[in-house]
Image (cartoon, rainbow, N blue to C red; front, side, top):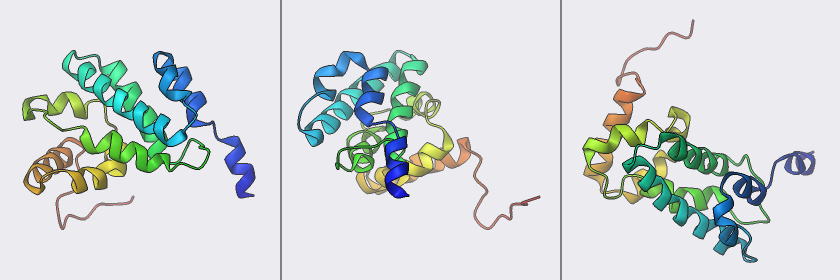
Length: 153
């Protein structure tokens, strides 16, 4: 049954080539590890540029691809593309980003994606900086405050 599920998933290379044809050189590299990590490094630079220029559609497209890899929605030839997305893209989303630009970054990241990549941010970032980013996220995504009860009705 698991093999059937795997075959139904799109391969990350096909999905990436469809979304980012300008990066065919990286996507088509024979070594899958080299290909996925280098693609994410390129996409990180493009994400930073898109956020700076307020091209939210482009930035959101990059985050959506990374999130698909992070959640295991895309197949690979054996490389752990969730880890590649985590350490090559999501860990670095707030590197050298002034707090005044956090709203632009968060405008491209759905809550479920933030929740999925949070562990990578926490691992990579300075604890004090992570605490600030996480507090901002909790406000933006309206997480319940500590100890608050949430009705499931």
